[in-house]
Amino acid sequence: MSWNEPGGDKKDPWSGRGDQKGPPDLDEAIRSLQEKLSGFFGGGKEGDGSSSGIPPLKSLGFVVVGALALWGLSGFYIVDEGTHGVETRFGKYVATTQSGLNWHFPAPIERVNIVDVKQQRYIEVGYRSGGSDQALGSVPKEALMLTKDENIVDVRLAVQYQVKDAKDFVFNVVNPAATLKQVTESAQRGVVGSSKMDFVLTEGRSEIVAQIKKEIQDVMDNYKSGIQVTSVNLQDAQPPEQVQNAFEDAIKAREDQQRLINEAEAYSNDVVPKARGAAARKIQEAEGYKEQVIAQAEGESNRFSKLLTEYTKAPDVTRKRLYIESMESVLAETNTVMVDVKGSNNMLYLPLDKMIQHQPSIQQPNVPQSTAEQPAQTAVEAAQPAVRTSTRGRDARGR
Image (cartoon, rainbow, N blue to C red; front, side):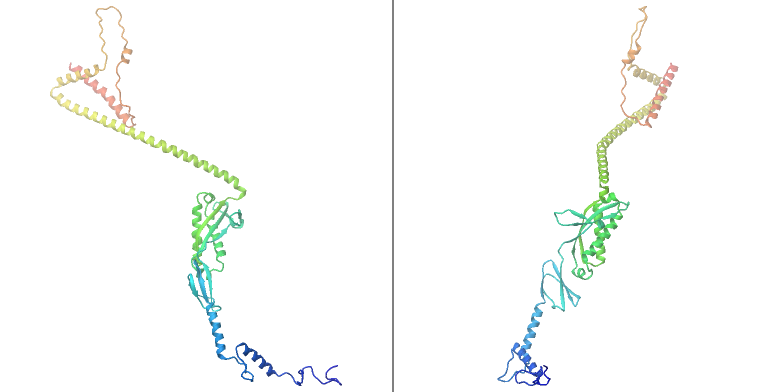
Protein backbone atom coordinates (compact mmCIF):
# COMPACT_ATOMS: atom_id res chain seq x y z
CA MET A 1 0.00 0.00 0.00
CA SER A 2 1.13 3.55 -0.54
CA TRP A 3 2.44 5.72 2.22
CA ASN A 4 -0.51 8.08 2.16
CA GLU A 5 -3.31 5.51 2.15
CA PRO A 6 -5.53 5.04 5.21
CA GLY A 7 -3.86 2.83 7.73
CA GLY A 8 -0.39 3.81 6.61
CA ASP A 9 2.37 5.17 8.80
CA LYS A 10 2.32 8.44 6.92
CA LYS A 11 6.08 8.23 6.11
CA ASP A 12 7.21 9.58 2.76
CA PRO A 13 10.03 7.87 0.81
CA TRP A 14 12.30 10.97 1.11
CA SER A 15 12.39 10.82 4.86
CA GLY A 16 15.78 10.41 6.49
CA ARG A 17 16.92 7.32 8.26
CA GLY A 18 16.71 6.93 12.00
CA ASP A 19 14.94 9.65 13.81
CA GLN A 20 15.34 12.29 11.08
CA LYS A 21 11.97 13.60 10.12
CA GLY A 22 12.97 15.94 7.08
CA PRO A 23 15.03 15.89 3.91
CA PRO A 24 18.89 15.79 4.10
CA ASP A 25 20.55 19.13 4.67
CA LEU A 26 22.30 20.51 1.53
CA ASP A 27 24.74 22.46 3.67
CA GLU A 28 25.94 19.26 5.30
CA ALA A 29 26.66 17.68 1.93
CA ILE A 30 28.71 20.69 0.85
CA ARG A 31 30.56 20.74 4.13
CA SER A 32 31.44 17.04 3.79
CA LEU A 33 32.86 17.62 0.32
CA GLN A 34 34.96 20.54 1.57
CA GLU A 35 36.41 18.40 4.36
CA LYS A 36 37.53 15.79 1.86
CA LEU A 37 39.18 18.39 -0.36
CA SER A 38 40.94 20.06 2.58
CA GLY A 39 42.32 16.71 3.63
CA PHE A 40 43.69 16.16 0.15
CA PHE A 41 45.51 19.53 0.17
CA GLY A 42 46.88 19.09 3.69
CA GLY A 43 44.15 20.96 5.62
CA GLY A 44 42.59 19.65 8.82
CA LYS A 45 40.22 20.41 11.65
CA GLU A 46 41.13 22.86 14.38
CA GLY A 47 40.56 21.38 17.81
CA ASP A 48 37.21 19.76 18.02
CA GLY A 49 35.57 22.30 15.72
CA SER A 50 34.87 21.64 12.08
CA SER A 51 37.14 22.94 9.21
CA SER A 52 36.07 25.69 6.95
CA GLY A 53 36.97 23.49 3.85
CA ILE A 54 39.16 26.12 2.15
CA PRO A 55 42.80 24.94 1.45
CA PRO A 56 45.65 27.18 2.57
CA LEU A 57 46.89 29.63 -0.10
CA LYS A 58 50.51 28.61 0.53
CA SER A 59 49.84 24.99 -0.41
CA LEU A 60 47.92 26.02 -3.48
CA GLY A 61 50.83 28.24 -4.57
CA PHE A 62 53.27 25.33 -4.30
CA VAL A 63 51.06 23.25 -6.51
CA VAL A 64 50.79 25.97 -9.14
CA VAL A 65 54.55 26.63 -9.14
CA GLY A 66 55.30 22.92 -9.45
CA ALA A 67 52.92 22.55 -12.36
CA LEU A 68 54.46 25.56 -14.10
CA ALA A 69 57.96 24.15 -13.55
CA LEU A 70 57.02 20.83 -15.07
CA TRP A 71 55.36 22.59 -17.98
CA GLY A 72 58.46 24.73 -18.55
CA LEU A 73 60.81 21.74 -18.42
CA SER A 74 58.77 20.04 -21.10
CA GLY A 75 59.92 22.78 -23.47
CA PHE A 76 63.48 21.42 -23.66
CA TYR A 77 64.23 19.29 -26.73
CA ILE A 78 67.31 17.90 -28.45
CA VAL A 79 68.01 18.32 -32.16
CA ASP A 80 70.19 15.49 -33.47
CA GLU A 81 73.16 15.94 -35.79
CA GLY A 82 72.06 16.40 -39.39
CA THR A 83 68.61 17.67 -38.45
CA HIS A 84 67.02 21.08 -37.96
CA GLY A 85 64.14 22.13 -35.75
CA VAL A 86 61.42 24.42 -37.06
CA GLU A 87 59.68 26.25 -34.20
CA THR A 88 56.15 27.57 -34.62
CA ARG A 89 54.13 29.71 -32.22
CA PHE A 90 50.41 29.17 -32.64
CA GLY A 91 51.19 27.83 -36.12
CA LYS A 92 53.38 30.77 -37.19
CA TYR A 93 57.08 30.34 -37.95
CA VAL A 94 59.42 31.56 -35.20
CA ALA A 95 62.93 30.20 -35.80
CA THR A 96 65.03 27.33 -37.13
CA THR A 97 67.22 25.65 -34.52
CA GLN A 98 70.43 23.74 -35.09
CA SER A 99 71.64 20.50 -33.57
CA GLY A 100 72.00 20.41 -29.80
CA LEU A 101 69.85 21.22 -26.73
CA ASN A 102 67.18 23.85 -27.37
CA TRP A 103 64.16 25.25 -25.55
CA HIS A 104 60.83 26.62 -26.65
CA PHE A 105 57.57 27.49 -25.03
CA PRO A 106 55.82 24.17 -24.47
CA ALA A 107 52.57 23.21 -26.10
CA PRO A 108 50.10 24.53 -26.81
CA ILE A 109 52.00 27.81 -27.30
CA GLU A 110 54.88 26.56 -29.46
CA ARG A 111 55.63 23.36 -31.32
CA VAL A 112 58.74 21.98 -33.04
CA ASN A 113 59.00 20.06 -36.33
CA ILE A 114 62.25 18.11 -36.65
CA VAL A 115 63.47 17.90 -40.26
CA ASP A 116 66.36 15.67 -41.41
CA VAL A 117 68.47 17.77 -43.78
CA LYS A 118 71.19 15.17 -44.43
CA GLN A 119 69.04 12.23 -45.40
CA GLN A 120 69.16 11.26 -49.07
CA ARG A 121 65.58 10.76 -50.17
CA TYR A 122 64.53 9.44 -53.56
CA ILE A 123 61.52 9.00 -55.77
CA GLU A 124 60.96 6.57 -58.65
CA VAL A 125 59.28 7.59 -61.88
CA GLY A 126 58.23 4.98 -64.42
CA TYR A 127 58.97 1.97 -62.22
CA ARG A 128 58.74 0.65 -58.68
CA SER A 129 61.48 -1.36 -57.00
CA GLY A 130 60.47 -3.70 -54.23
CA GLY A 131 64.03 -4.03 -52.98
CA SER A 132 67.57 -4.67 -54.12
CA ASP A 133 66.85 -8.35 -54.83
CA GLN A 134 63.68 -7.81 -56.81
CA ALA A 135 63.30 -6.89 -60.44
CA LEU A 136 62.12 -3.50 -61.51
CA GLY A 137 58.40 -3.25 -62.07
CA SER A 138 57.38 -0.93 -64.88
CA VAL A 139 54.60 1.62 -64.50
CA PRO A 140 53.49 2.25 -68.10
CA LYS A 141 51.40 5.27 -67.16
CA GLU A 142 54.56 7.06 -66.04
CA ALA A 143 57.18 5.40 -68.26
CA LEU A 144 55.73 5.53 -71.79
CA MET A 145 56.08 8.84 -73.63
CA LEU A 146 56.38 10.26 -77.14
CA THR A 147 59.58 11.51 -78.74
CA LYS A 148 60.07 14.32 -81.25
CA ASP A 149 59.92 11.90 -84.20
CA GLU A 150 56.61 10.45 -82.89
CA ASN A 151 58.03 7.23 -81.47
CA ILE A 152 57.23 5.72 -78.09
CA VAL A 153 59.97 5.05 -75.54
CA ASP A 154 59.96 3.54 -72.07
CA VAL A 155 61.97 5.82 -69.75
CA ARG A 156 62.56 5.15 -66.04
CA LEU A 157 64.12 7.69 -63.69
CA ALA A 158 65.29 7.75 -60.09
CA VAL A 159 65.64 11.18 -58.48
CA GLN A 160 67.64 11.68 -55.29
CA TYR A 161 67.13 14.81 -53.22
CA GLN A 162 67.63 16.27 -49.77
CA VAL A 163 66.30 19.20 -47.76
CA LYS A 164 68.29 22.42 -48.10
CA ASP A 165 65.88 24.73 -46.22
CA ALA A 166 63.83 23.23 -43.40
CA LYS A 167 61.49 26.23 -43.14
CA ASP A 168 60.52 26.16 -46.82
CA PHE A 169 60.24 22.38 -46.73
CA VAL A 170 57.72 22.53 -43.85
CA PHE A 171 55.62 25.54 -44.83
CA ASN A 172 55.64 26.08 -48.61
CA VAL A 173 54.73 22.63 -49.96
CA VAL A 174 52.05 20.39 -48.48
CA ASN A 175 53.45 17.11 -49.88
CA PRO A 176 57.03 17.64 -51.09
CA ALA A 177 57.56 14.08 -52.39
CA ALA A 178 54.36 14.07 -54.45
CA THR A 179 55.11 17.54 -55.79
CA LEU A 180 58.63 16.54 -56.79
CA LYS A 181 57.31 13.46 -58.56
CA GLN A 182 54.83 15.47 -60.59
CA VAL A 183 57.49 18.02 -61.51
CA THR A 184 59.84 15.20 -62.55
CA GLU A 185 57.23 13.64 -64.82
CA SER A 186 56.56 17.00 -66.45
CA ALA A 187 60.25 17.77 -67.00
CA GLN A 188 60.92 14.25 -68.26
CA ARG A 189 58.15 14.36 -70.84
CA GLY A 190 59.20 17.82 -71.97
CA VAL A 191 62.85 16.89 -72.55
CA VAL A 192 62.14 13.51 -74.15
CA GLY A 193 59.38 15.03 -76.29
CA SER A 194 61.86 17.51 -77.78
CA SER A 195 64.45 14.80 -78.64
CA LYS A 196 64.53 12.07 -81.25
CA MET A 197 64.28 8.42 -80.33
CA ASP A 198 67.80 7.46 -81.41
CA PHE A 199 69.25 10.34 -79.41
CA VAL A 200 67.33 9.28 -76.29
CA LEU A 201 68.33 5.62 -76.54
CA THR A 202 72.00 6.04 -77.52
CA GLU A 203 74.38 8.95 -77.17
CA GLY A 204 72.00 11.51 -75.68
CA ARG A 205 71.40 9.93 -72.28
CA SER A 206 73.77 12.09 -70.27
CA GLU A 207 72.56 15.28 -71.93
CA ILE A 208 68.92 14.37 -71.32
CA VAL A 209 69.59 13.62 -67.65
CA ALA A 210 71.32 16.98 -67.21
CA GLN A 211 68.43 18.86 -68.82
CA ILE A 212 65.84 17.04 -66.68
CA LYS A 213 67.76 17.78 -63.49
CA LYS A 214 68.05 21.48 -64.36
CA GLU A 215 64.35 21.84 -65.12
CA ILE A 216 63.34 20.02 -61.93
CA GLN A 217 65.56 22.24 -59.79
CA ASP A 218 64.31 25.42 -61.47
CA VAL A 219 60.67 24.54 -60.83
CA MET A 220 61.26 23.46 -57.23
CA ASP A 221 63.17 26.68 -56.57
CA ASN A 222 60.26 28.68 -57.98
CA TYR A 223 57.98 26.82 -55.58
CA LYS A 224 60.41 27.61 -52.71
CA SER A 225 60.12 23.99 -51.69
CA GLY A 226 63.43 23.85 -49.81
CA ILE A 227 64.48 20.78 -51.85
CA GLN A 228 67.89 20.27 -53.48
CA VAL A 229 68.02 17.68 -56.28
CA THR A 230 71.34 15.86 -55.86
CA SER A 231 71.17 13.41 -58.77
CA VAL A 232 68.94 12.12 -61.54
CA ASN A 233 69.66 8.56 -62.67
CA LEU A 234 68.34 7.18 -65.94
CA GLN A 235 67.62 3.61 -64.90
CA ASP A 236 66.46 2.44 -68.31
CA ALA A 237 65.46 3.81 -71.70
CA GLN A 238 64.24 1.42 -74.36
CA PRO A 239 61.53 1.02 -76.97
CA PRO A 240 58.34 -0.85 -76.07
CA GLU A 241 58.50 -4.63 -75.89
CA GLN A 242 56.52 -5.00 -79.13
CA VAL A 243 59.34 -3.50 -81.23
CA GLN A 244 62.30 -4.54 -79.09
CA ASN A 245 63.65 -7.13 -81.56
CA ALA A 246 63.47 -4.79 -84.53
CA PHE A 247 65.21 -2.08 -82.59
CA GLU A 248 68.02 -4.45 -81.58
CA ASP A 249 68.56 -5.28 -85.25
CA ALA A 250 68.78 -1.58 -86.02
CA ILE A 251 71.32 -1.13 -83.25
CA LYS A 252 73.46 -3.97 -84.62
CA ALA A 253 73.35 -2.43 -88.08
CA ARG A 254 74.39 0.91 -86.64
CA GLU A 255 77.27 -0.76 -84.79
CA ASP A 256 78.42 -2.45 -88.02
CA GLN A 257 78.27 0.91 -89.76
CA GLN A 258 80.38 2.50 -87.08
CA ARG A 259 82.87 -0.37 -87.21
CA LEU A 260 83.30 -0.02 -90.96
CA ILE A 261 83.71 3.73 -90.59
CA ASN A 262 86.43 3.18 -88.00
CA GLU A 263 88.22 0.70 -90.25
CA ALA A 264 88.06 3.14 -93.17
CA GLU A 265 89.40 5.95 -91.01
CA ALA A 266 92.26 3.72 -89.84
CA TYR A 267 93.12 2.85 -93.46
CA SER A 268 92.90 6.51 -94.40
CA ASN A 269 95.20 7.48 -91.55
CA ASP A 270 97.72 4.94 -92.82
CA VAL A 271 97.57 5.73 -96.55
CA VAL A 272 97.12 9.49 -96.60
CA PRO A 273 100.38 10.33 -94.76
CA LYS A 274 102.32 8.05 -97.10
CA ALA A 275 100.73 9.65 -100.14
CA ARG A 276 101.43 13.10 -98.78
CA GLY A 277 105.06 12.17 -98.19
CA ALA A 278 105.43 10.80 -101.72
CA ALA A 279 103.78 13.90 -103.15
CA ALA A 280 106.09 16.16 -101.17
CA ARG A 281 109.09 14.18 -102.40
CA LYS A 282 107.97 14.46 -106.02
CA ILE A 283 107.39 18.17 -105.59
CA GLN A 284 110.88 18.62 -104.19
CA GLU A 285 112.37 16.65 -107.10
CA ALA A 286 110.41 18.75 -109.57
CA GLU A 287 111.55 21.94 -107.88
CA GLY A 288 115.15 20.74 -108.08
CA TYR A 289 114.81 19.85 -111.75
CA LYS A 290 113.19 23.23 -112.36
CA GLU A 291 116.10 25.04 -110.76
CA GLN A 292 118.53 22.92 -112.77
CA VAL A 293 116.85 23.67 -116.10
CA ILE A 294 116.59 27.36 -115.31
CA ALA A 295 120.26 27.50 -114.36
CA GLN A 296 121.25 25.68 -117.55
CA ALA A 297 119.09 27.98 -119.67
CA GLU A 298 120.53 31.05 -118.01
CA GLY A 299 124.04 29.69 -118.53
CA GLU A 300 123.35 29.03 -122.23
CA SER A 301 121.83 32.49 -122.57
CA ASN A 302 124.89 34.12 -121.00
CA ARG A 303 127.19 32.04 -123.18
CA PHE A 304 125.36 33.05 -126.34
CA SER A 305 125.41 36.69 -125.27
CA LYS A 306 129.17 36.57 -124.82
CA LEU A 307 129.48 34.60 -128.04
CA LEU A 308 127.59 37.30 -129.89
CA THR A 309 130.11 39.87 -128.68
CA GLU A 310 133.00 37.75 -129.95
CA TYR A 311 131.15 37.05 -133.20
CA THR A 312 130.79 40.74 -133.93
CA LYS A 313 134.52 41.16 -133.47
CA ALA A 314 135.64 38.17 -135.61
CA PRO A 315 132.79 36.49 -137.46
CA ASP A 316 134.86 33.98 -139.46
CA VAL A 317 136.91 32.78 -136.55
CA THR A 318 133.92 32.50 -134.28
CA ARG A 319 131.90 30.63 -136.89
CA LYS A 320 134.73 28.18 -137.48
CA ARG A 321 135.15 27.57 -133.77
CA LEU A 322 131.42 26.95 -133.30
CA TYR A 323 131.41 24.48 -136.14
CA ILE A 324 134.36 22.59 -134.72
CA GLU A 325 132.79 22.48 -131.25
CA SER A 326 129.51 21.26 -132.66
CA MET A 327 131.14 18.52 -134.69
CA GLU A 328 133.19 17.53 -131.67
CA SER A 329 130.11 17.16 -129.50
CA VAL A 330 128.22 15.24 -132.20
CA LEU A 331 131.00 12.87 -133.18
CA ALA A 332 131.93 12.18 -129.59
CA GLU A 333 128.64 10.32 -129.07
CA THR A 334 128.79 8.24 -132.30
CA ASN A 335 130.70 5.16 -133.38
CA THR A 336 133.30 5.65 -136.10
CA VAL A 337 133.45 2.97 -138.83
CA MET A 338 136.50 2.90 -141.12
CA VAL A 339 135.79 1.35 -144.55
CA ASP A 340 138.40 0.63 -147.22
CA VAL A 341 136.58 0.58 -150.53
CA LYS A 342 139.54 0.84 -152.90
CA GLY A 343 141.09 -2.55 -152.27
CA SER A 344 137.97 -4.68 -152.42
CA ASN A 345 135.47 -5.52 -155.12
CA ASN A 346 132.94 -7.08 -152.73
CA MET A 347 129.61 -5.51 -151.78
CA LEU A 348 129.81 -3.55 -148.57
CA TYR A 349 127.20 -4.30 -145.91
CA LEU A 350 126.88 -2.06 -142.87
CA PRO A 351 124.56 -3.22 -139.99
CA LEU A 352 123.43 0.29 -139.17
CA ASP A 353 120.48 -0.83 -137.05
CA LYS A 354 122.70 -2.81 -134.67
CA MET A 355 125.28 -0.07 -134.58
CA ILE A 356 122.64 2.46 -133.58
CA GLN A 357 121.37 0.16 -130.81
CA HIS A 358 124.87 -0.05 -129.31
CA GLN A 359 125.20 3.70 -129.09
CA PRO A 360 125.16 5.04 -125.50
CA SER A 361 121.81 6.66 -124.66
CA ILE A 362 121.62 9.88 -122.72
CA GLN A 363 119.86 9.38 -119.38
CA GLN A 364 117.35 12.02 -118.48
CA PRO A 365 116.19 12.53 -114.86
CA ASN A 366 112.94 10.71 -114.12
CA VAL A 367 110.90 13.71 -113.08
CA PRO A 368 107.16 13.95 -113.67
CA GLN A 369 106.41 16.97 -115.74
CA SER A 370 103.40 19.06 -115.19
CA THR A 371 101.06 20.08 -117.97
CA ALA A 372 102.47 23.61 -117.97
CA GLU A 373 106.11 22.42 -118.22
CA GLN A 374 105.56 19.99 -121.15
CA PRO A 375 104.74 22.64 -123.81
CA ALA A 376 107.67 24.78 -122.68
CA GLN A 377 110.08 21.82 -122.93
CA THR A 378 108.66 20.85 -126.33
CA ALA A 379 109.20 24.39 -127.58
CA VAL A 380 112.81 24.40 -126.34
CA GLU A 381 113.53 21.03 -127.95
CA ALA A 382 111.96 22.19 -131.20
CA ALA A 383 113.98 25.41 -131.18
CA GLN A 384 117.36 23.71 -130.61
CA PRO A 385 117.46 21.81 -133.99
CA ALA A 386 116.39 24.99 -135.75
CA VAL A 387 119.27 26.89 -134.18
CA ARG A 388 121.71 24.13 -135.11
CA THR A 389 120.34 23.99 -138.65
CA SER A 390 120.62 27.72 -139.13
CA THR A 391 124.15 27.69 -137.72
CA ARG A 392 125.21 24.89 -140.00
CA GLY A 393 123.62 26.73 -142.94
CA ARG A 394 125.59 29.83 -142.15
CA ASP A 395 128.77 27.74 -141.82
CA ALA A 396 128.16 26.13 -145.18
CA ARG A 397 127.54 29.45 -146.84
CA GLY A 398 130.68 30.85 -145.26
CA ARG A 399 132.74 28.00 -146.63
